[in-house]
Image (cartoon, rainbow, N blue to C red):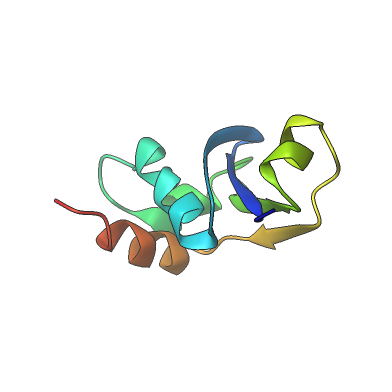
Length: 85
């Protein structure tokens, strides 16, 4: 089985993906109006992160994440730039 990644913003899941880049692209859902990811990520409680699970089934079974990956503004910007227009 392949890994599964969930994007977290303000403690809530906002999207997911089969790989890290796909999960990072989920942050487009919370894109700030002024496009200032540095300010948005620094906002109290934002704490963007990606939780990595062993598989989609592990995620559905509420297994603990194998890893929590802190997300930087730069990671989000780069991922979103890869989205088709």
